[in-house]
Amino acid sequence: MAPRGRTARATLIAAAVVLLHAAPGAAQPPARGTAPRIAPVDLATATEDQRAILSGSTPARRAGDVDDGDDPGTGTNELRTYAHHPVLAANLVPFARYIAAGSTLTPRHRALLIIRTAWLCRSAYAWAHHAKAARRPAPAGAGLDSDDLARIARGPGAAGWQPFEATLLRVADELHVNAFVSDPTWQALTREYDTQRAIDAVFTVAEITMTAGTVNTLRIAPDDDAPDRLPVAIPYQLDVRPATDRLIGKSARITPLEPAEWTPEVRAWLDRANTGRPIAGIYRTYARHLAMDKPRTLVSEHIRQTSTLSGRIRELLILRIGWLCRSEYEWAAHAPAGRRAGLTGADLARIVAAPATADRATPDGDTDADTQLLRAVDELHRDDAIGDATWTALAMQFDTRQLLDILTTIGGYRMVSMALNTFGVQLEPGAERFPD
View (tube, rainbow, N blue to C red):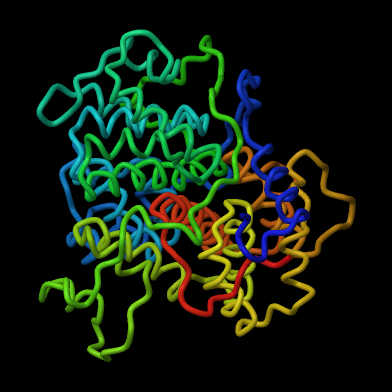
């Protein structure tokens, strides 16, 4: 039986959404432009706050610092671009470094997930940056060579993979297309992985997807010391069928921690204000892996609390990406928040009905901010980059920090949607369902 609130109309919309992604045998996405849309911060003219980011001396950076082999004093092109928005950078770096080098995964498994995701997103920067790290010999790196990298691009069906390595690549493929890991792939993953490693596997793909969308959109050039490039001779193919399967109304794959299970550390983390109030299932699920959740929370709290965007714009972006990812938990949480922030019933209907417009030119004189923002979400979801016309329209209305926050909000809640869908986090009692 279909979940309550899922009508034929909603099902058709969902099918249209997932068809935006590459189907099996699809051609390669168009090549990215080369000129950076936001130039990296010039070290010679950097402000004190920007220098603190680039030197790794901010408190948030120190708290999540892990040696991923990069010299933070020099600053990658990516970090120098984020340095235009020091508050954002300080909140992104700890989780990025956790995913790159501090998770529970082995360097080889981590590299398979990261580099496959970079390939799926057609991200020249992410491929070059992470291939450099993956080439490092064990134990710090995965010890991959050029043949290994090419095989990752060919995907899970390429000859030579161990069965579980092929499973990891399928996890990346399914999350990229459907924001969800299918039952057979999840079962294969969790036969090998415990809960914390399964959580890390999903968030590895999700976090790299978030950052790839940003570096693609901003056209950040690979660093000079990262010579690997996307192997253009390998066809871009995915053996994943678009699907709308979800676990709402079924059993959670990862059950939330009940209060009786909370250790003192978990209790202190979940109820940091010591209010004694009930804690939502999403947070009690993530609390099964505090080492991951603590740096991840910096990203989410920036989006909700220290972003330069208005509450209305933030919720509009979150609701649209949640809808595209078919994350009903996100809709349930953010539709009420959107109304409190000023979204009307007509706005919510528009968020649901907005067509995927990445392949349509921006109409002359169309400067409506909501139109451009919805178009940006659709393009980032479909192409892992915002197109020229939409970016130009946004850049006329938002400053550099706001543009970075737009990208992080969309990518951050695509990341969260992947996790919520895959872990099967259930709705809170009385939660709002997807609209009919």
